[in-house]
Image 1: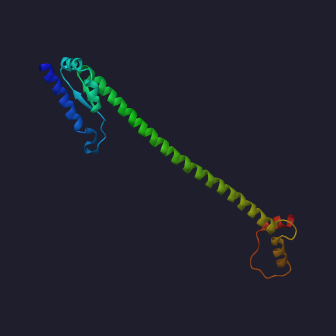
Image 2 (image 1 turned 60 degrees about the vertical axis):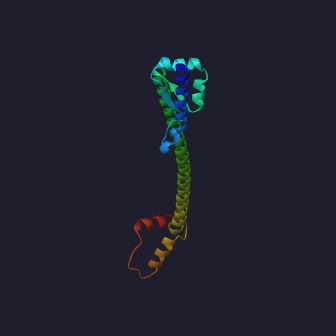
Length: 169
């Protein structure tokens, strides 16, 4: 009679714990299972011996039955699972951040290549303009200086280095 009452008490307690739905309580990060601690290990073992489905039935209600000898191992397992879950979340965040960084880097490289192309184009335009200004026969510097030589009234003079360069070509 006492064993039957004990078994009924254990079943009633884990059913009540399962019905409380602790995982959704207060919207906090909680495990999917509740641990039901039975402090007298022989009492739990006796209940297991009487009903071999007791552990699985409790597990179906999302309650894990633990005693003195299994509590620390169970808590250690829970801690490990939580740690792995955190690492998994971190790995997903790292992968997401890495993807965003990669995309940003790719855009930065495209911009640098575009800047380089524009610098090259600017240098080519500068060289072409300088060629017209100082190089080849009939360059602009020499033609303008020739006007001054022929009598054009000017208050300023073109830089001598530029004149020398334009005369040599």
